[in-house]
Image 1: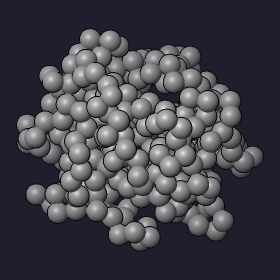
Image 2: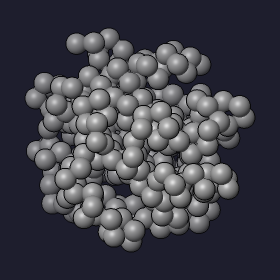
Image 3: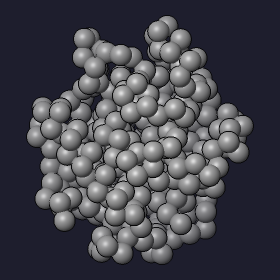
Image 4: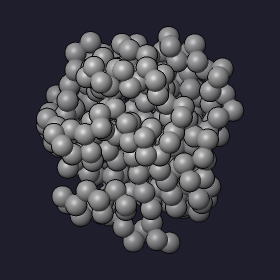
Length: 288
């Protein structure tokens, strides 16, 4: 299968099965961080998150399920040409589109936030009425950053402008330009500062729609997640993020990513451990 022509195998995430064809979910690393605007290093996230996942139990107190009963496959990390943004984005897109076409849910570990663009593009091919739930400190709605439109600061703007996704919900946002704020008032549903409370309010209108979840770890306050490229004070707690995952368990989640974990800045693996727990809960809650 074409997907495996572009992957490098690493240690599996805890509880992963060894059969792609029987899996309902596929974990895949996208180690690209070429477009960050402050601190690089998120290309090392997938490897470290897998390593610290063995600190976790396979059983979840949140949903009373066990990874031993969760049919997911860890495909390893995509082999991306370092520095070549366009080719890397195409490899990510082709891989996610294949996973989705095969009837499986992609769970992608970034990488900087631009990797979400080809992921959403690949999932949207099968689900044209896709809704995107975006958890982040930053609006990411710019048309360009320093003259470049291929940036982690433009990713959600590209999802709206280029992919034509009409239902974009943004939670926890607390940073952006005036232009981004005004764009959001017309084109997205932006909920600044908090996440769980506004998510509960829109839950009913999301039911029945195919949902893609993208989580920039900097939605969490740097007190709880210091290992990220663009930390922003005033964020949600790690508990609130986990609460949001539980709230979304009733939805039809067809794609998921977690991005911007940068292990080199991570004190005692705090952020990587949080990301591993987010992935564990997401696998258990969204693979039906």
